[in-house]
Structures are given as C-alpha cells and as structure tokens.
Image (cartoon, rainbow, N blue to C red; front, side):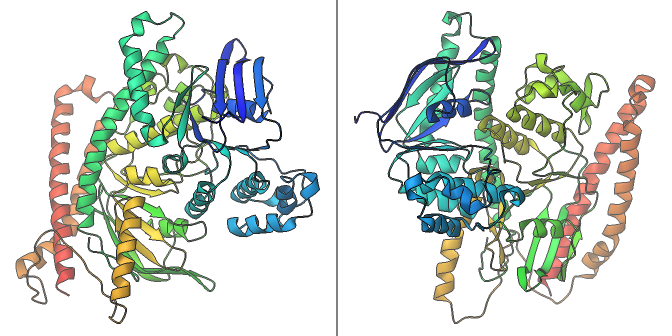
Length: 602
C-alpha cells in the first residue's frame, strides 16, 4: 500500500463536555475515493473540517505530505466578499495562476452558471454550483466535498459524477445520495462515537457490513463498557429493524410497479407499453393531452396520464424543465394551454416543499406535534401519545420537552417530517423532500412513505430515493417532451435506451400510442351496452351521495366524548362508516372500469 498523503493521529475534539472525536486515527492514500458516513450529529462535517485544516483539534496530530494541496467544499459557501461569481471561482486558484481565466470559464460553461452574477443576488443553486467550481478549479491532490449534490439538479449531479470518475487525486465525500456514493467510492470511513472504522470496499457493501457490526454489538452488549448509553442500543436496534422492514416494502413496490406498467399511456416521441386520511376516489388525477408554453418555450406538449389511488409518481428533469409547472398543472393550480385535467373526488392534499414549515426556536418538540394541546396527537384518524410518535421518528422520548433551538439541522428536518405526516391526507405532494436530509432521515422518510395509504406525487433529483419509492416516473427532458415510464430512475434510463433504439428502427413510421390494459378489452362496438351506459350515468351521483354520507359519519366520530357518552352509538357508526367506505370503493372502481371501456370503444 502506498504511503498516505494526509493522516490524523490521536485526534481529540470536544464540544462542551461530550467528545466529538475521541483519539481518532485515519489515513488518506493517493487517489483513494473515500465516502465518510455516520449518523446525524456524529460529527462528519466537523471531521472534514479537521481534515481540511480549518478546525484545530484539542489534541492529536494532523500530517500533510509536503507539496500536497487540499480543497474543501462547505455545505454553506460564502461568496459575499466577491463582486461576481467568476471572481469567487478564481479565488480557488493560487496567486501565480490568477491570469488563467479560461479555467473558470470552462467550469462556468459546464455547470451552466452566469459568472457575471453578483453573489448577493445569486440563487442557492447558482451559489452552490459556483462553490463547486471554485473547489475543482485548482485540481488539488486531496478533494474534500461536504454534500456536493445538495440542491443540484439531476443533470448537474450526473456531470459531477462523470467528472470525479476520472479525477486524478484523493477525495473524501459526505453525501446522502446513495447512487453518487455507490458509483464513486472505493472505501468507506464510518464515524461512530468519535471513532472511525474503515471498510476497504465500496458504498454498496456498507450497510451489510454495518448490520454485521450492529449484530456483534448486540450480542456483546452486556460486556460493553457502561459508558455506552442506552440510546445507542435503542438506535442500533431501530436501524436494523427498519432495514428488515424496508426489504419487504421494496418487494411490495415491485408489485405496484408491475401493476402500474399495465396502465401507463405513453406520449410524445417515445412509445412504451407498459394512513392518511379518508379514501380518495379511485381516479385521483386524469390529464388528457395537456400542453404548457411560456413565451417561445414549450415545457410539455400533448401529455396524458391517469393517476389512480395508491400510485406513487415521480417527476424528474433538469432545473428549468418545467417540473413544478407540470406538478401544479396536474393539481389544478395552473391551467394548461391545451387539454384538460380532471381531479378525483374526496381529495385531501398535503404539500411538503423545499421551504418546509417554520419552527419556532422556543417551541418544544411536543408543542410542534400537538400544537400545545397536551400529550396526545391526531395521526390521520388515530390518536397517539406523543412519546410513542416521537420514538417512531428516531427521537428519544426524553426529548419531548426539548426546545427546537437545541436540535441539530437533521433533527429539525426529522421533526418537520413527523409533524407533516401526522396531518390527515390522501394525496401527498413532495417537492424536493430529500434536500438537507441525512441518510437515517432518508431511510425513515422512505419507510413512512412505504406505509402511506394514499397517492404520492414526488419531485426529486435523488436517483436512489426515486428507485426506492415511486411506481412510475414522468420525465421532462427539457426539450418540450414529457414521457411516463414504469418504475424509478434506473427503470426510466433502461426503458428510454430501449425506446430510442426502437424509434430509430421505425423512423419512417408514424408515431404510435399504445395502451396496455391488464384486463381483456372487448371487441369495439362503437358504444357501451344499454346496461353499462345506464350504470355510468348513475354512478357519479351515487359516488357523491356516498361521499357526503361518509363525511357526516366521520364528523360524528370526531366527537372526542362520543365513546364515553354512548359506546353502542360509537360502534354502530364505526361499522356503518366501514361499510360505506367499502361500497364507495366498489362503485368508484366500477366507474373507472366503465370510463376506460368507453374510451377504448371510441
């Protein structure tokens, strides 16, 4: 093994009385590609700053091979002392290379950043890309990147990944993007309780290795030093159990994707055959030949989709492609220039966007979840004790009365997820929910979405998260096309490659639209039978009546004193509500089947 270019030995660092780094030792060899992982609050960013020489430890030694240069990308770059983003990027070059403006121009072009922009008026994404360019421009021998994919669109992430694959130097990466780490890392550094464990294998082997370590710790827990806190044991058991549950969820997701593949109607140039609140209608969203143009630019054209109850649809594309506009159009918030959108019945929508809700620093965790109303919280239609609910979201119950100001950034994000998921809904809209989330919180979010009974619309640049969550993906390439593919990001890439090959072979043929329906379609007769047409005419009113009756029953059950006042009435209303919901489900499914049959006969 080649001698290291950077080493840490016996590093000690304390924040208050607790050690962040405890006699830590690690080495970085030339050309090594290391991912640095650890639980939220473990000190990953702090360790990276120690490696960069930006934080002086309380004790120990940092050694850097003479002549070796180090560049560091922070999570929150500061360019306020520069007059332009171009000048900020040039600051990454040594003084004797400040005349080489072309190096900044190349990176600005690759990252699609306007170098003349004043940093004070730059967007978060523009500043982030400029900071990345500043880190790369000097071509250092050691590259330290703290969450380089945060707030980057999917195209920029792909560009960075390819750029780093041929990087001639060592790198240490902190990222929540599993695909990014899997494609780049050759070894893993696991920061855990102030110490670094090393796995001489890529990120794809990390979780199995961690599970093995956890299992060994659980086996020997009684022999461990008494200084190991109880919450460490609890967290280890929680992580292992969560991974086991997620394996089952992934199997269910594959089954849902198989169902979704049978109903996707492709549009554009590519042809493919393929707990919340009360129940929504069986058909949640139907878009027929919708188009949207701003100025001279077409965002999407002649796009159609049917989203049914329980579908989990991802929306993918580069920044500026029109993802948010398409999302708002599907939700009825923006009207299409052509075509139409129909929303289903009884929709109860909640939106979790990049800004998320504000948290008051003086509020406690219990206040955030209960609104200051005692120790109980409504989660959908259920009542839960706040201590139990907090534990499900990886908080120790003793934190219930902790002020929000004492939480880390990752813990705040986790609390926001817990607060939003407690709200009653059957349609959840998530716009870039993975930004700034650590891996534990990402796992938790995936698990929670896996249990969600409603419909999900998800805008994300996180390829792995899309692969783990969605049943289909609507992709905007940025050229005015919008195409729906069964499955997640990886499925889209594979299907697109096959579709493009098929298109090249059939270039002379007219565009075709294929709809694959699992149930057999009767021979076209031009119209429905009298019986089916009569049923189709009556079903909308029947569904509306049932929906009103269900709302009335739900209102009666919402009385917190009903059970104690009249237990038999509570039981009777609950039974009637269950029967009405089942009947509504049957009628909505019949309505959907008849509508599809009618469309097939046109």
